[in-house]
Length: 334
Image (cartoon, rainbow, N blue to C red; front, side):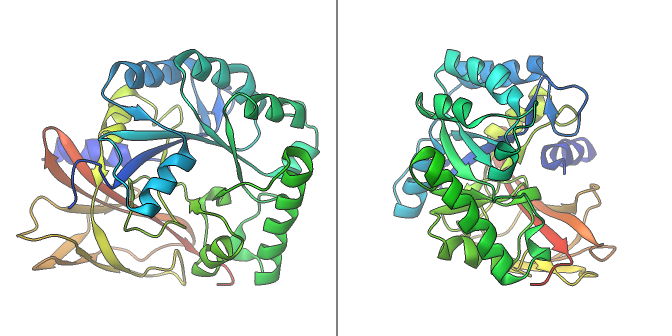
């Protein structure tokens, strides 16, 4: 039991459901082959192993926009549907990730903060390189203009960040992006509403979990990978994961006041809840009180300032697991 729990904790690291018919696994990377930045980098041998596993296995690697449309429209996806995403305009994406993805024929989405490109930093992408990749199948998503901590901004500042980025995308690429990713994965309920009001079809955090059609499409999960959390076993568990059907999560706002110890939700479906485990980012298990399909998870300590994770997993049979994750941020202006 302890070995299984530890394996699932690693899966969450970093910082009814059917076999994936109404869900998808979304992967997230930052840098490639930049070993000076291990917390955001994936080694090239690790990344190649990930791509080989996807190419040889029963996976359907699809464009993220196609997956979003299917989930929102209620259309079924193949079992083990996967999307590949990257955050930030690092040059190593062009030099190392893109050639390897092209060789496999895998689509991907790059979430960009426009100020990073406009700054013309030597280790970052240029607009010409972005256009080159976009012309050959890469999709571009918004990551704001200046990559701020959104919950710490005033509402008008959040709207201005999104609008300024959209103007630059339109100037350089001809149109604003359809998808959005929160810098650092940080967001509040206000920020989720701002992303929706701006016209994005969906928005994404940086918390491990499976994107399920019935979860809020403006805070869908992605499994992040770096050098420490990039081994093939963790990757396999992630791409084989199924959605844990969490509904009515409380607190639902990803930005909270701090000190929270109770997390309440219900699991969609019927029958007794078996094998459920919930824990924090450090792997500390929460005490669970289960009544029917309603669950109360009690943490041993309250949420601290900054980013925290709440994760629940449940065995699904066949060596697969159901996985739900949520990131909370203590602070912000709402």
